[in-house]
Image 1 (cartoon, rainbow, N blue to C red):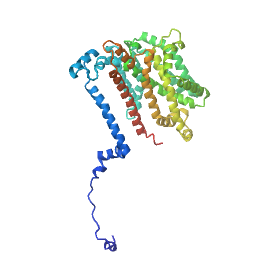
Image 2 (image 1 turned 135 degrees about the horizontal axis):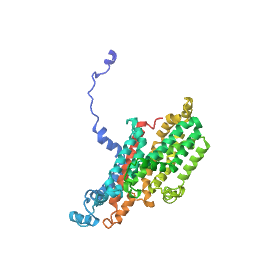
Image 3 (image 1 turned 90 degrees about the horizontal axis):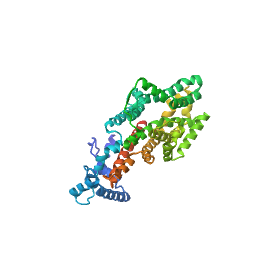
Length: 438
């Protein structure tokens, strides 16, 4: 400070003041409440109305939920306990139906001594899915990821071990044709061969091959028929199978629809438009009644597997369109950049195009998966006892005739936990990949 300026002011502070906390109104909960709930007269009025509504809902439901009866063998017994504890006609839930029939709601008619098999299958499925969902998991586990669907199938249905092995050999056959056939027969022939040859193998050779291998070395566990699947086990099997199988099929269809190859392009377009143009319930009835007519004479195809195939095809059409949207969102320069690096088609798709397109498509893909999982309840219309079907069966019994809300709340809560978990993972993945930054 110059001497002239120092002489023109009466006081100049030459030391810094100690730091102080901001006022109470400008920090913490008080600030958040004032800014978010009472920032103006309209916001304050809406907040008070919302609080009154929440209070009204909790006042009418909280006691019904908390004071519910958990130990009873029938609705009549549950009401007798209620009258003894809280007086005649008290409004409390009868959760005893959940504790009494939880095994049917979760496993259906699956044998109780084999409950370990679906539980182990879920664990195998989770371990196999971990390398795909989280990049911190060792990449070597991807080999287990490829084997997990066949292990899960064998654990759930049982029977000969050689059945899943013969089916897995079809995928290896398709991979070998696609990998080594391009140099010998060209990309188009190899791609068509990788699709057609495995299908023919599964239709005509896989069954006899599994039978021969089983005769040579019989390995297997007790077979459990599909009609014993039910409850949430059925929903999880159909939903998880549809999600896992429809994702790669959707990618192939999206690439096929954008392909310049006429046959692949037309086939993809016709498939997608046909599947999307018909409601899922119609395809489920098709799986139940008509699919066997398209198979070789004498073939008895399992109903649950038919449903899984139809759900997979239906979901793959929607996934293909979601991924096609991601592919269309990429600038032309990305394709030209891949060409300038000298990459072939599959290398450019794998290393440059698809990672960006899938990153853009994450919200749409997860929404399709959530919708698919919830749509599994439609199987009740073709005679499969999913959770809704079992709730109807339980309510039709003499013990629990007349009970509604407890079963539907339990079923809805289980679906909500599953769908909310998928939604949270999607949001975490979007933040991790920074989908808003391209």
